[in-house]
Image 1 (cartoon, each protein chain N blue to C red):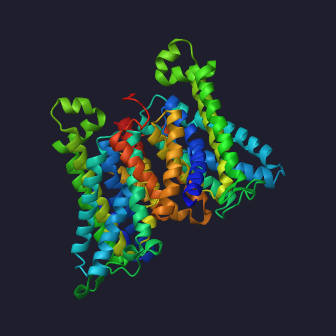
Image 2 (image 1 turned 60 degrees about the horizontal axis):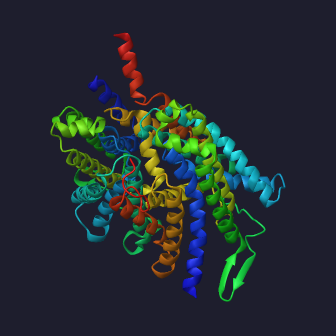
Image 3 (image 1 turned 120 degrees about the horizontal axis):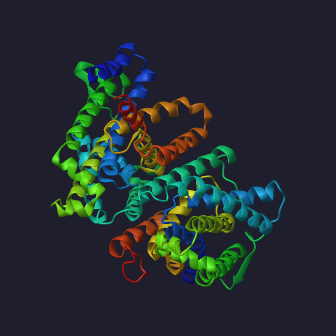
Length: 288
Length: 305
């Protein structure tokens, strides 16, 4: 029974990781940026939801949607000022720029919101569902439900819509895409904003399961990296499988080995994956 | 030129202001650390996020050898550097075959594991409490105590001079040119007979050894260390020094460390905003001044000649 409970917890946490990782993998796939600031958009999404509820008096769902829109707008600005001018530069420069942006956002958040932890209270955080000995909070069910829908949505969007196909073309060959008349700058902005919206949404959904503090972005982006590396940088189905594996591995490892080393499990996984299959577990052959 | 600089740097000793001397000592130690990271980031052109771990390994090894196993004080820092280098060799050996963003993430993973072990191996490292009362270097017969800034500063300055000279020689040696060739174009470098992997590994091991040695000096000077020295906060600080000052140059990291040490202190009253200032500086340099502050000086020199 304990095993089933841990498995379920792991899957629920894993869906949260998937939600964080999808945006990260999109940005890498299309813009070729390993975005260290992705976690900060997660943090901002959670904080924006918190303030929309506590200061504007909105209820949880409208606050979450407002936060998502706000952060998407912020993402547009961030891309315009920090990444678009560097698009032709070496990936090393982009990495440093994203690190700078991450530090800027995290420390600004600390200066403005204060370092004391906040708690994002939702109507679903304390409500639980029980089957026999197994208990799940409604918040976790909400995460699993929304994340599953979103993955399907993003997958279908990229596969079947015109915009999605333009994103694929830009990812495969930016110059070639531009030659066929695709405005790659627009595709980049669009993708970055979409990724930020996904990060914010994951912050608003996963944020209530932990305490909220300005450095939570570090945690989010590290989990995101682990998932993305496992699934292969740029792959959405990889992110889905990677997230679930990480969630389950942490839950089982945490309860059967040691809680203290729970976070190290993820790092051990990425080291093993990068050394054994640097292109990711679920990507056939070398892509680049 | 060098004589003037040395004179200026020794002037505070005559004035004997302990606070200024302490800041200058920290600057010299941070410079050593930034120079070691510069070997990886500037010379080899790879972004390592695990460098803080080697600094921490050097600090912890040296402190623990002296405190728990009563090793002689002069041997412990060398052993700290040695263990950091050994770990650097191991980690470098498995990860340097991977390049670009994946290498950055991989080193981030290794760094995080070292930090986790330090945090949870409480029996040995005392966990998050850290180590305190670390014995300082001393020459009792001369009345020197190297936990005092006025005694440590000349030593740190001397070591900084030695390392700067070493980096200068390295830059102009065959090996140094091999580093640059590997950074600029690994395929071309391999085609003229440079063993790319071994060149990178050598650079990485030298950098980690220097980071470990600096960590040991830092531990015996401040006499307190916590696992925080391996955290991402320290890692970002190091990268800020190297990038703002000028990666790949000789004096850039030293200049970056100077700016970091003193601006951080000057902005102390602004609280959390001071790191916002550094983050903004970092981005400004990445976008507008990719070769850092030293390149301003070089530009002016070119403009006048």
